[in-house]
Image (tube, rainbow, N blue to C red; front, top):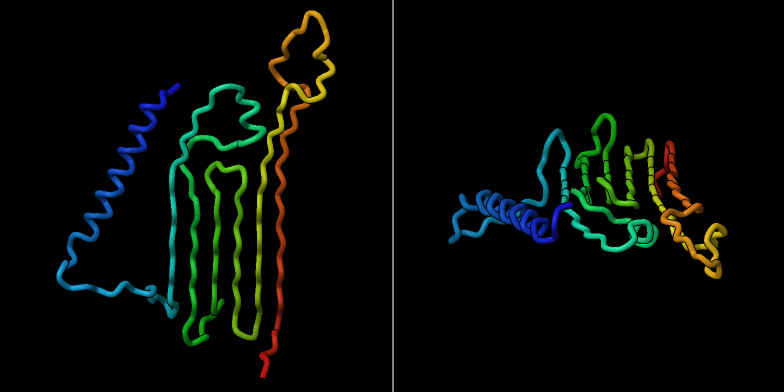
Length: 184
């Protein structure tokens, strides 16, 4: 098992390298001249905005790992914390869609993650989709354990729960409107 100090050093090196890369990207700009940040870039008739937030979660578990998974359930590892993509047609003359919005969070090991999407073509259709996944690990070995009553003598500790309950719920909904009218 990696010690806490080594894990902190690894995270510090990753943050330092990302900071150097970000500084190198902005080093070519003239410091005396302020340049406006673009609102998005244009491509194929769309104005596009995109963002991605990645990170790393470090967790050190002392004590019962089953109890940690029951109450917290956040493990170490890299994560896609959040991402978003927006494509908007300015003239509404595109072939497949005029607007596309996608937003997601929690991918890469989090117990809860989701995706929200919206696609529409002016007056033709409007499609919306939502997906969410929740993962719950319930492994509390003292809850109503008939194999180990607290009044027994001798009391034999049970290191795993006979009531282990791991569940994943995948929830989604979809909404499609076709040939929508424009209000006056």
